[in-house]
Image 1 (cartoon, rainbow, N blue to C red):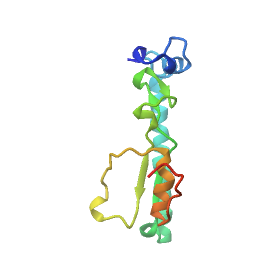
Image 2: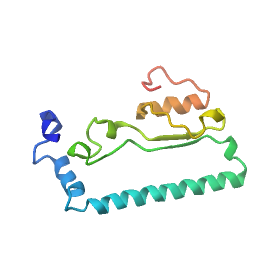
Image 3: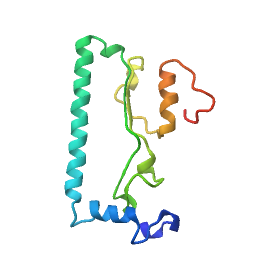
Image 4: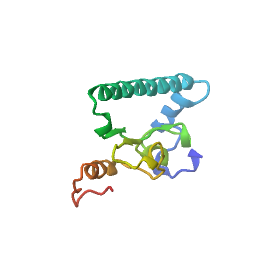
Length: 141
């Protein structure tokens, strides 16, 4: 598939993203170690979030606290024959966003919203949660 992309994506055999993909994800390379490392990192984040929640529960403020978990943006893990975050593919431009808002309807607890979240959406979303208006120049929603 990567060979069919336009030239400006730099998909030739000498392109840096292709080299990185080959080093990280091509069978016979260290891709299994990379996947283990990614899963270990996710496990560490999961543990840390659990610790934060324990402290909030101990302080008695969990049920009045808006929790927001996000990162910068997604990452390509071999999709489209590429690695990292350099390209405007769905996998690399989406922003992971998990929110727990005690004001949210109980019907929505544990539900997944499949709408895309982009980094431009984060500030307006958080301002809205704080009942503040986003500035007119903000692009997100």
